[in-house]
Amino acid sequence: MRYNYRYRLKPTDELHERLAWTVDTCRQVYNHFLHRLNRVDGTSAYSEQKLLPDLKREWTDLKDVHSKVLQKVVQRLYDNLSTLKGRKDNGYRVGELRWKAPQEYRSIKYSQTGFKLNNTSGRPVLSLSKIGDIPMIYHREVPDDATIKEVVVKQEPTGEWFAVLGLETENDAPPKPEKPKKCVGIDVGILMYAHDSDGTAVEGPDLSEERDRLERAQRNLSRKEHGSANYRKQQRVVARRHADLKRKRRDFLHKLSAYYAREYDLVAVEDLDAKGLMELPSNSRNRAGAAWGTFLQMLEYKCEREGTHFVAVDPRGTTKECSSCGVETEKPLWVREHSCPSCEFEVNHDLNAAYNILARGLDQVGVVHPDSMPAETALPTDTVVSAKRVVETGSPVCSEAVRPSRVG
View 1 (cartoon, helix red, strand yellow):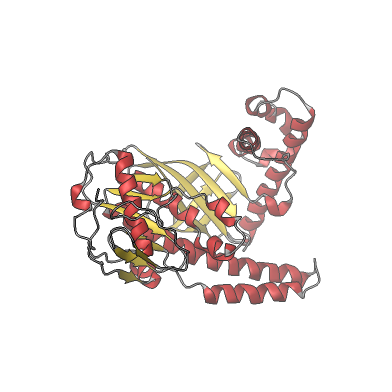
View 2 (tube, rainbow, N blue to C red; view 1 turned 135 degrees about the vertical axis):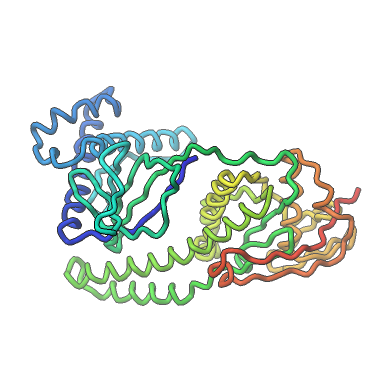
């Protein structure tokens, strides 16, 4: 299995300058090979990497950059080109690869060699070839059975440096159960971030204070003279406000997704087109802030890691369809209760959708699970869990709710 562990680096001023110089040199190498790509036919990542030794003799500064780092710069260019061609083949309108400005190129990658975790005088450091020993905040141990395959060093817009260790373990993911017992369907929304088929409604995180601070910082930035020292200083303030917002949101999403991946044998969700939802004419800010796409990505890889079935189902009609009898009823979004005119089943609007998502997930996997859909149609009582509890503990308390059965 592969993991990514992220650590904060605390370089000295000298190491900071060395890191910044290495990143900028790699940016220039990227632009150099992009220039060749646009003017030389038949190039490939492998053929261009073979030119690096000769380039070092002409460009002597490159001798102070580890060879694997330079190879990964070339590989990065051709990976970007492959991604661009893939999007074009899928019908998207794409342009061309552009030269990287300093603010657009912020990371370097070591692969296989050139790095090592050391303990110097009781202080953990990340040793990088051609750069030096960089102190780091070692907030969690690397597993004993894990091998570090690569290291990505990145500078955030705030000016902070981070290292992402790509780990690989010999242990495979636990097998997924053939007959999952604990199954859940999750409907994501804005009023309640997640509403599952067990009757638990999880509130989204309150980021109003972070947004207010960000907006004030952006207004102050707009008053500065563009390019001045005060302008650049305020840019860092805006970047820190963005980082605060992002960290709090991702902390919430990590803990919520980890809970569902660990506590259930099967998790069914809607296969949402997050980008398409962003392009809808109204309420796009709340949709962007919800970060549903990020949540589903986190949930998917954590389910894979924990040996949990992850099922993404067709979202069409999950709110309209009655989870008891299957009859579709048109209702506007502001109607928060589902009341079926056919079978008179009444339930919360989002809970009804969660039931349908779970039923579709079980059908898609081919699992017969009678215990998950009892024959009662009483109105269940939801348990509302605040985002604060999720952030603090990472484990919202679920209560068993009575689920309806599909009749007829």
